Amino acid sequence: MTSDADLIAACLRGDPRAQRQLYNQFAGLMLTVCRRYLRRQEDAEEALLLGFAKVFRALPNYRREGSFEGWVRRIMVNEALMELRRREPLHLSFEDFAQPENLASTPATAQTQLQAEELMALLQELPVGYRTVFNLYALEGYSHAEIAEALGISEGTSKSQLSKARALLQRRLNGGGRPTERAAVPMYNF
Amino acid sequence: MLPDNIDDLFRQKLDGHTTPPAPDLWARLSLPGAESDPVDTTFQDGLRSHATPPRRELWERLEDEHLRPQPRRRRVVAWWQYSAAAVLLLLLAGGALWSGSWRQAANSGAVASHTGSAAPATRQPAAVPAASGAADAANQPQSPVVAPSLDLATSTAPAAVEKNQKILFPQATTTSASTSSTPIASTARPRRPATAPQASTSHQPQRSQPDAVASNLAKQGGRKTPAGQSITPSPQPTAPVVTPSNRPDAPILALAPVAPAATPEIIEVEVRRGAARPEVAPATVVAVADATPVPARRRGLRLGGLLRQADHLVHGELAEATGLPETVTLQARLGGRLVSKTIQL
Image 1 (tube, rainbow over the protein chains, first blue to last red):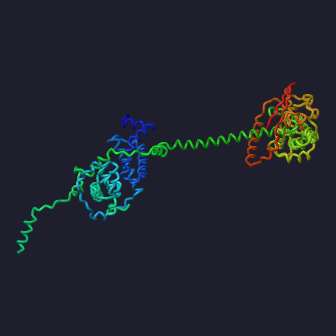
Image 2 (image 1 turned 30 degrees about the vertical axis):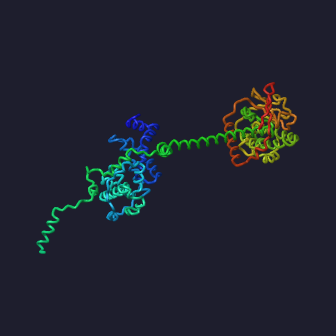
Image 3 (image 1 turned 120 degrees about the horizontal axis):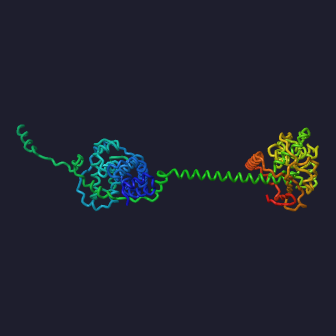
């Protein structure tokens, strides 16, 4: 088993087998990342493809700061966001944020037993704005400032989207929300 | 109740009263260091190590479209280059075959005496004696022109062959004096046989000289000039190669006495139309060739003819090809030895 450093060095030499190994090592994880942002599988695969192309191109610029997987993941997230803009442009309606929503949160108890694919399904049912902000904040660790810059929205909008996404997810985790209830969430038009 | 009492009432009731905030308010503050939301934790834990196996085609697409797109294109370009080169080679080979077959067809049917392709040098020397009678030679483009007519005649009737031979012999003498343009005309004949008869009729042989010499000259230059063109005396004198004494076997040739040949090696070549049946083949031609190597100009002519053949092929002029005999018999006398070869075209 070669380390990331060896793998990167081999890839920098243009070794096709190393490129394939790097792809095999990260493709599954990164496809999950892309799927979290993009509903359609084809769009997620397209983002994965373009992301890997960027990874191999930008490999000489990798400065070995932080984990290599984190670097790859960041590239994939950026690529997924770009694909999202192409496929599902965000139409933010800030007035909608003032509308009250049932944000009653109940402690999630059974969610830990949920399988990953069920969680994925829950994520993909979210409106694109909720989903994107929740992904960036809760799962990628972006700050609201970074999210605001990446999506071209204000930090307040980002925070509001996040809280509403959480509330909706929690409700659905508790079985209180069905996918059909999405119509009751007028936050975004896709 | 007095107003003072009302104030005291609200102060007493509300002072120190707390309204419990909504539980998500803290999360909405999202201060750094704040506890992670349980929903966040759920999704983080559930999806952290989750991998979606990609389809196998994705790697192939990645390779083809992003990692190694260039080699594919190069391969395609190389394929086209190879195919173009192959087509060019086929064309050249076809042209070479055509030119060879034409040369043989011209020799068998029309040209009475043919200086073999191997010995063009002898043709040039033949022009030397002719140079003396250059004035007569100017009138005689016939030698190149006559050949095609002979071709046709031989195929049809032997009588015509004899007539042609008669024509050829004098032509040969005149052509010996003619310039290099004459041979060009002669080679042109086989392609345009229709023009040949006119020229042949218009120009009658005035001088009699060895046929072989004449034919040699005719063949050399004949390709480039049209059959009808007049022959100009060749600037380079050529030594006469053929003497009647050298070719006792050739029955067809009525060779006029020629100045003694200076060339030591003489090869007699008979080219007959059809298979190796001398009695059947109507047109028997004796060619006297010298064994000297082919000059560079001759090669140039060959290449030119080859390209011309390719041009004819491109323009669909296949009629010429159909006039070719199926087989040509070539007989050569090397000293006292007779060598015959039948070539299937």
